Length: 136
Image (cartoon, rainbow, N blue to C red; front, side, top):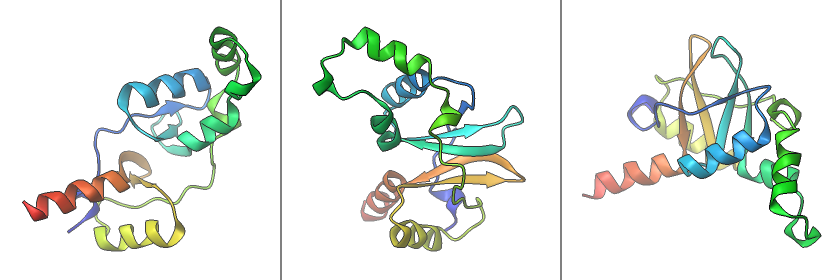
């Protein structure tokens, strides 16, 4: 089984200048925890996780109104918190090897890159879905 057989596509991504508010809205709208960051040509330049976004947000304990928190997020571009060194895989890679890498490195996803461009994303949920299909 190859990565292309398990990965999620299309993948939703943001640009480096997009605000963290856009990232937050995309995560909520698409129910995802990982958002790749791409340049104008569609090349992967970074990755933002839900945990990264939470770290960038003001704690609810600060008792700052949601509107003010949203304004703060609108002022921070994705490039400010994205991981720039991101492990990736290819659609032709062995899915077992990719899963093993995710497990060993304790990462929740691998962006899938082909010819330099982001083509999909491989997540823990993709492996659960594939496992359930095998059991059916």
